[in-house]
Length: 393
Image (cartoon, rainbow, N blue to C red):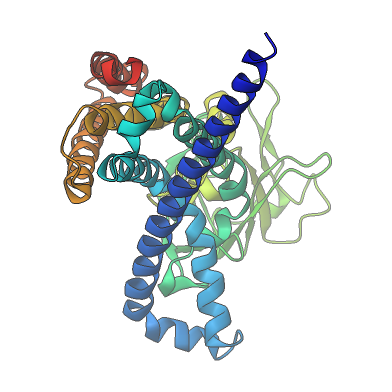
């Protein structure tokens, strides 16, 4: 009994050394791949937009500081996009490397199963997935304003075309003949269409500017219109409400905080949603997207609902991708590192094509949003289980 205890301790120490060795190799590979790809992206994109950076830096600090700040925020988005691929590459490279140097054979000869050998790799991959989730849900939404500006609009002062949207709670069509400016939450030349029951003073609300104001105190959120030109004489008219008493159009007649030729349109459609570009969903947290489902002013379609379900499925998909790739290198006698990377790329391309196709079908109403998000798991999890025999040996 006394001899077995030192032997068990020695065996545990050897396993700990092996774990540290594999972990170091995995982390080094991950960092090298991520930093290399990030650097390549930064260099190509920076030289493409160098003129814009130089112009902006003349009034906003040094060129190096402007470029550093711009791409510092984009590293967060780049990590969210590529971390699962880098994790797979690092894991497959690490396993292939120890195979190439006969270290895997030696470990198996010592009685250590393959599943135990790759245990630190799987644990580290889980940590990276959790970091990705935290980055996705907490960090990116907090710097959403910075990430929403491209190199041609570094300060957010360039106007964007407004996407007309209905406020489904009030029936008001929010639109503009001008542009929207994110840095001021301003809409130029708002031209709101009033629905039946709220068009007592005219079917249109036309003003020079519109400013989004979030809820504050007793005042609801909505749009402050200044320089109202239509309807004429709105200053002397009473405010309008829905049949349930909820206010929609506030006028100076009833609210002394409004100045002449001003009015306030109550709406739960935020400026970000109204002036959103194609990446607004990517910059919102899952909690914010789910909140949109309960917002009476918004009407989420299949695209938004598919995105919500996909957010919940994504961590499991990332782990599934890892378990699809590892058996490919553990079951092969070929120890070519470049072949392993090639297999990894083929697997990633096939995996991403299936995921994108399912999400496209969900966004296009071909499939239910929940089914479109979960279908890749239904396809790949059985494949991962079928290929997992080398992990159980």
